[in-house]
Length: 424
Figure 1 (tube, one colour):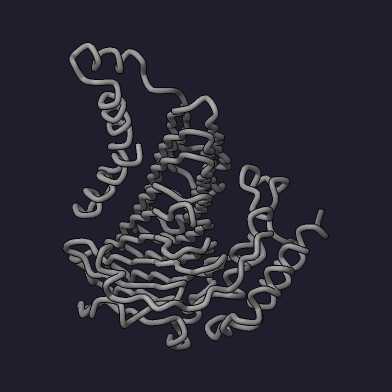
Figure 2 (figure 1 turned 45 degrees about the horizontal axis):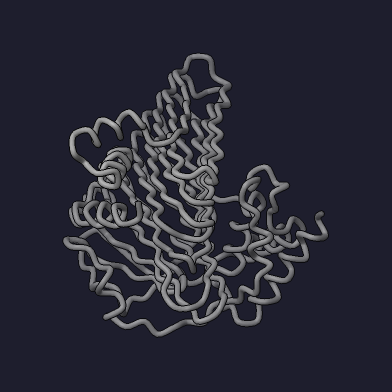
């Protein structure tokens, strides 16, 4: 089995090595470890417990090559801009200062990863272990020139930052998108990350983000995925939350042929909080796979998770969430909920909430539910003159609203609401 997996990994390495740029912002020792792990372990198949429902090896046996940079005009960007935000653009993994808004906000610093000074470069890969996941290793070896976003100590950004990741190719291609988001002490930021695929070719995006939320800082993020039938992606968020800091994230997946989200949060400082919310809608033969890990390392921390899925046709949804409470993490409060609606007899949902607790003075719970549209509610609405299709949309919209309302930016919330209504 290992030989089979290694063959796929080796094939990828050969395909993209010749045209990939040399990564100059990751030290050689880390690069070597990542490459060796990738070669020895390979790309996960369904025999790997963490990728049980998501056979990435089969996907990557396709002829994905390193993507060539494509010309994207400001006109291409304009249609995606959001009102009352500033836009930062990343094309095929590379930060484009030309296409981005001229951002002049006191306390905000944005730079390409290749332009970082020695101290900033030390943060890269500091929250990840390249020997734990093939996609972290793959990104580390072949990372594109992403960006570093830093909010200075004591700065509260009042304008949301909209980061637009555009993947575009005329043939099957692979993109290794990477970023580093750093909030220093007592700072605040509201960030929107939006992933889209344009062009005729299928694109596999391997996204890796390291987020550092320092003491008393507050980071609010929304990840919006609308990759269409051309999009395949693995998205890894590695988040470190320090003392009395606050991290919120809402992930909304509206489309993508295969979307795998790994959200790993470490609560490393006392009195810190993290809240993860998710909403996905799948149809056709799409697969949306959400994995979360909430690692409580110290006492007096709190976490909440709410994920909702609407699965139609022959599509598949997955939620696998783990709450990990370490021995010293007394007085932990941690809650997790997964709720799903199946719209078709051929649709599938696999949900697996997990608790692993080594402390004895904690409050932790998890729950999951899956069902069809409430027929009694449908009957009630039909009896009051609301047609079947309108009633269906009303009930699904109501189901999704609990997550959509977590989005703080009005223009994004309205956009997602409209797109969601069209999808269902």
